[in-house]
Amino acid sequence: QVQLVESGGGLVQAGGSLRLSCVVSENIFNFNAVGWYRQAPGNQRELVASINVGGRTDYADSVKGRFIISRDNAGNSVCLQMASLEPEDTAVYYCFANILSRFAWGQGTQVTVSS
Image (cartoon, rainbow, N blue to C red; front, side, top):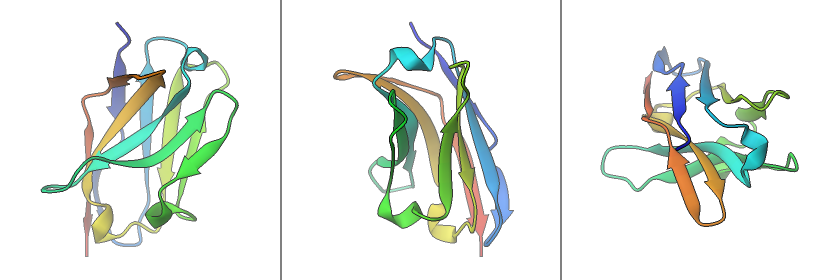
């Protein structure tokens, strides 16, 4: 069973930056897409950014121009570079890997942005 382990969360002031990393136990090029969801208290989990096997990236409107998703060419990890962070970005961020209708998830990493 594929395993995903996130790191890089933490507390940052508004306007600051963080970089999240996700190490995947299988080659990420075996999946249709990998990326990041987030879930704030009382909210549904929402897609933040994804990158598919062909390299196409997609972003939530709320993070476009501030977040960048990337992957390493060896296929071991996916990262999310977050800049100009806002208090509204506060959430638990989950790495995912998707193939067809199946999703695998990491345990999540907390990102807290103070105003």
